[in-house]
Image (cartoon, rainbow, N blue to C red; front, side, top):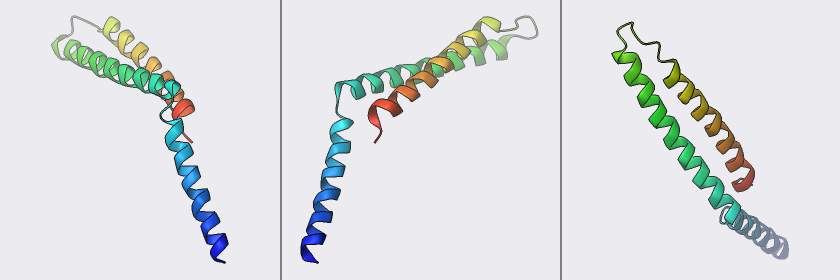
Length: 89
């Protein structure tokens, strides 16, 4: 029984170490960088779109700003997918 418990503890330890090692790979670091950049781009595009809508007064349709926001969202979705692929268990 004691040997089985030690084996289980070692297995859990190795599993946790494997996950930590995977999140420390170059691919994962690159994916995290892409994710952070995409998150920043969405935030910036959202602020620009919000400013346009708020200041429009019915004279501007803000299509350019919305297109920029939509593109940033597409990039964000790709970055999330990449991060999940490269950094998750």
